[in-house]
Amino acid sequence: VQRPISEIYQPRVRGRVVTLPAGTDMLTSRRAGAGPHFAFVLEGKVRVTTVDGAAHLLSAGDAIHLADQPPRVVANAGT
Image 1 (cartoon, helix red, strand yellow):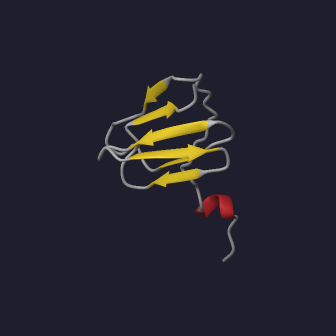
Image 2 (tube, rainbow, N blue to C red):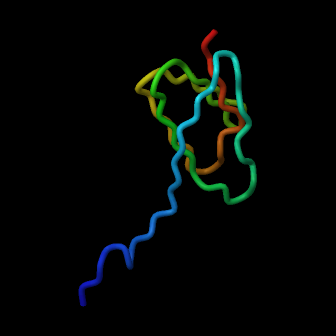
């Protein structure tokens, strides 16, 4: 029996474009079950700090995927 792919595969991915002015940051969702996070930097530099305190500096063209816990803070690392 063949079924349309839309009947058997329903991804739960949501996307958004976020602009952070230089020197600003934002707290991300900390609720349980927030799901994995993926970020791709279009331009500039972004610092992603995870719940364990590790900081990752990303530049234009870089990407990060956090499967277990959402990032704690996402900040524009520019001046």
